[in-house]
Amino acid sequence: MKQVRCSWAESNELFIPYHDDEWGVPVHDDRLLFEMLNLEGAQAGLSWLTVLKKRESYRKAFDHFDAEKIVLYDAAKKEALLQNEGIIRNRLKINAVVENARAFLEVQHAFGSFDTYLWQFVEGKPLVDAKEQNALAISELMSKTLKKRGFRFVGPTICYAFMQAVGMVNDHAPDCFRARMISQE
Image (cartoon, rainbow, N blue to C red; front, side, top):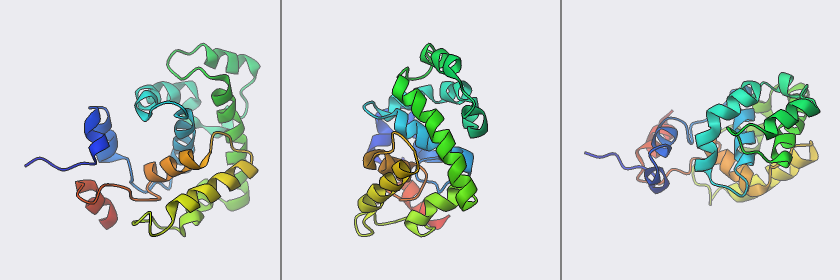
């Protein structure tokens, strides 16, 4: 018997492992949260499939999203990133990762962890009924506060996609096998 997945996951073979193993699973690891926020930002104006195909290249190019290393990137490193065909070569998006690293480290210092800061928006637990629990308004608030803290490429749409990806909101289709599994974890 075939497992029922969210319809988007069936549109490309690369989506299936991402959907089945990662999407919507609550993430509390600061480095992975930082990675996902930047990858969602890289998606702006593009598709998630484009970013997913380049994910490993992003990890290599940006020192596995080690913010302590990224804040040290100079003009030469940024220029080298602009020549890296494995990532999206957009100056604004590359600069945003560096700016986001600075903001990320400041948030860690102020709140103890990036995880603590982000998960406060959903009171520490995943939203199950996104519409009923006003997840869109939460993503707008998250966007606004992240921008005030110096983050870039964190508009409300990006924040909502980020919330879905890191399990802050469980937006799996009701009949998707992962919806039930994640809500039981």
